[in-house]
Length: 264
Image (tube, rainbow, N blue to C red; front, side):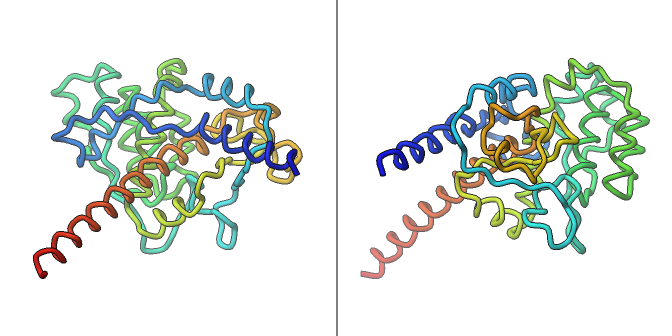
C-alpha cells in the first residue's frame, strides 16, 4: 500500500517539472493581440530532451498520434482538420525582427493567414523567422497540412535559429488554435495534469521517438529518444487556458456576489 502511494507522489512531481506557466513577452496593452503572443520559454528541443532524460519516474502519460476520424485525441495533431473549422493565424511579429527583416519589408508579409491546421501556421513561422517571403507566400496558399510541410522543408533553414525559437513558436501557434474553438479548448483542458506525448518512432523532435504501441517505454521519459516538443507545448497552452478559466470563474463569482448584495 505504501509503495503505491509513493509511486503516485512521483507521478505528480514529474508533472510539475515539465508543466510551468509560460512567461509571455506581450506587453499589457497588447496582451489580447495574437501578433504579440511570442513567449520566452527558455526551452529548446535540446533542453527538453535533457528534462525528459532526467525523469526516471513512471508518468501518467496520455499518448496520441493519428489525426484521422475516430482516433482518440486527434485534436492534438498538427494535421488535425475539421469541416467548417479554421482559425485566423496572426504571425508573431517578433519572428521577423529575429530574421532581420526591415520594417518596410515586414509589410510584405501577410500579418494574418487563415489556417485550417496548425502545421500550416508553424511552417509560416519557419519561413518568417528565416525572412523567406517567397516560401511564406507559397505556404500561405497551401491547401493541406502535407503541402504546407513539404513547402516548409524548402525554406532556406538556419537550424540553430529555428532550434532557438521552435518551442516558443509551437506554444504561440497552439495557443491561437486552442483559443479559437470551445471544443478544442475543452478537449485540452479535459486532460487535467496528464503528461501529453505524441507517440511515434518516426519523429524525434516533435514526438517522443517511441511507438504508441510501446507503453512499457513511453511511460518512462528517460527511455524516450525524442524531445516531445508538441506534447510539451500543448501542456504549456493547457496551463495558460486553465489559468484564464479560473480567473473568469472568479470574476463571475465576484460579480454575482455584488449583484446579490445590491438586490438585498
